[in-house]
Amino acid sequence: MERVMKFCGPQERLHYAGGRKPGSSRGFTLVEMIFVVGIVLLVAAMSIPTINKVMTTYRLRSAVASITGAIQTTRYQAISSGYPFQLVLSTTTSTFQVQSDPGLTGTFANVGNAVPLANSSIPVTLGAPTTLRFRPSGLVTAAVGATTLSLSYGGKTETITVSNYGNIKVTP
Image 1 (cartoon, rainbow, N blue to C red):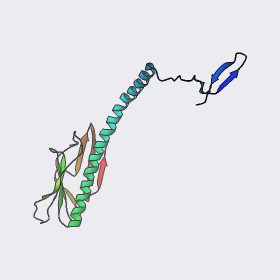
Image 2 (image 1 turned 135 degrees about the vertical axis):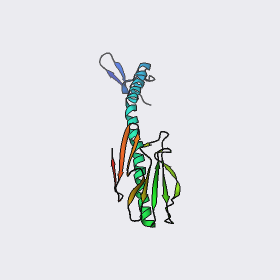
Image 3 (image 1 turned 90 degrees about the horizontal axis):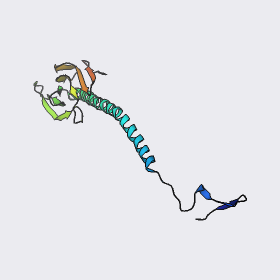
Image 4 (image 1 turned 180 degrees about the vertical axis):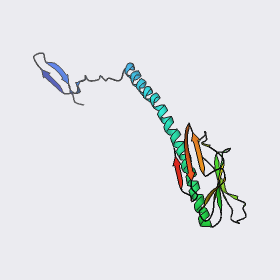
């Protein structure tokens, strides 16, 4: 590395390129580091409630999307298969289960496994146990409960209303 020196004025002062003397380097002082870490901790502490609120909303909307998707899919299965299906929503296990009656006997058998309402250690709460029955004509009825479901999580509640012909309305 080449040193650049200039002689200025009558006293012939020596100046170095970059404003530093060769061999000297400056880092951060302990006080500066503590100040920066303090600001970072303060910003993190202020953002935690916002993150919790966003996660609560996300988990609830995820459960709503899961149930509305299951309602639509089960209705389409009944229409395309030509025999009744039902969707059983359980409050005790916080799951839903699709069932079918291919023999048209009135006895429904499970299709696949029960699906949790939300993928979380703290489950989303379903207002009441509900069984929605889907006819091959597209008609939707409530065999147990009502065609209006409520889901709650973290103090927030969303309501899912299913019309007789499968239209779904979600209200916060």
